[in-house]
Amino acid sequence: MIVTSTLEASVIEGDKLVIKSGIVRCDGDIRVFSISGSGDIEVGGDIICDEITFTGKLRCNGDIVCSGNLSVNGSLGTRHISGQTVRLNGVLKGHDINSRALEVHPLRSTMFSRFDMDGYEDGSTVRHITAVTVEANHLQCRTLTADSAMLRNGSAVESATCATAIGIDRTSSVLLVNGDCQRIHLKTA
Image 1 (cartoon, helix red, strand yellow):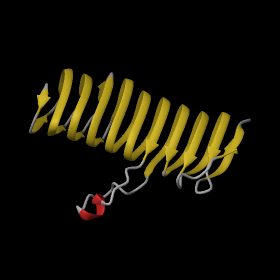
Image 2 (cartoon, rainbow, N blue to C red):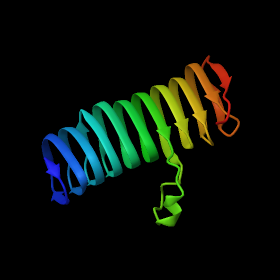
Image 3 (cartoon, helix red, strand yellow):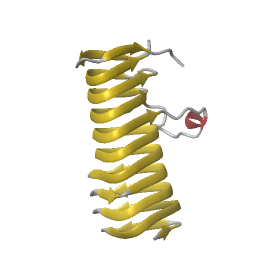
């Protein structure tokens, strides 16, 4: 299915959902093999897929269950994310994330303030993260459980449990570190 303008549906099921600068509004669940393209996606239910590669705004009131990789450039808001590799360049707002690898990086541009693109300069906020590896910039998190985590550029974690290593730069903080992990002091970029 290719969307070039606006698609409104109660449920979306199929092979591929390709959005070409379009808008998708779904009241229920989206169940597809892959989601790709650019634009806006608003989902009232869950997203269940193998892969997401998307640029724009993705808002999901339910859970995102991605058996493969999830990559979003822009804004991602959801309750729960499950995926092999979760990469976000932009702003993430969510309750909890379970993944093998998590990468969170903010977008930086002077265009955001000029063109009233609210929210893109905010940091990412997640309550709970469970992953094997975490690499995060400008992330606020209550609890983090990982084998290794690297936190930079004003990241703040209340409680971290790491098995191998936890790295923080001088602008980031972790209030409580659990586990027998090596602590690494990272250089600020």
